[in-house]
Image 1 (cartoon, helix red, strand yellow):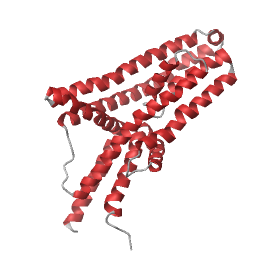
Image 2 (spheres, helix red, strand yellow):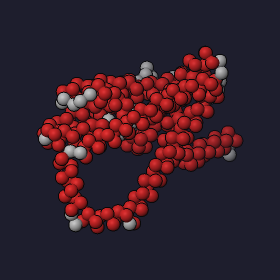
Image 3 (tube, helix red, strand yellow):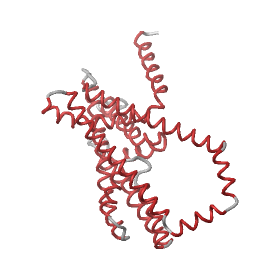
Length: 314
């Protein structure tokens, strides 16, 4: 066997083996990728004044990650308060009293405290533990890459062009997350205002922040609001509110704003839309990054190594 072919097969096998072993940590790698593209420009800005990469990285890390952490903590607090207000509703109190008086309540409680509850708690513990590990890996990798200013040194002209297209695509991809969140927040203002909900601008800010969370997103906010509207104004108005929120807050921004803001000169909006949708269906939460990244890489490879070299042309 030719030595070059053998070396290529060996490298390819190593990549496949690493991909298989690292598959459970893909969400952490995707988080690290997004954080690197967020932290790097902020770190470069502070480095002009601190003159030290490590200090600049620490400052940018605490600003970006601290902002998300603070907003998340505030969001959890507001969610708890919203749940308390919902439980204070007379209808909810009546349901609770009827449930406590029912004969099935004690049987259900014993079952929950038994094997079913143990399995449920174990499953929740494993899921929470995995997410903590993913977040830790994402934070650690992103901090190290930005601190050491790690790049991919290549001398080949085509490889440089390939990496340039991918780098440009990822920058637009990360930017699209924030632009989609901002647009969704503005779209939600007239919806909340039109239904007479209190503090519509505050709700819009929370909607924008939740839109940054893939898959779940703003559902966390407008679903409880739908329940509150149901108790206060009836079924028809609550269903109307839910339908408008699903269409204008969840669906349209994802299929229009996100791919349009992520497109580049090399990669159009339609392929990116396919990447977003198929990525989430195949890879779950991490697919919102991994799906478009695969599309961007594939199109970059085609443009550099096939289209420009004329492979396949007669």
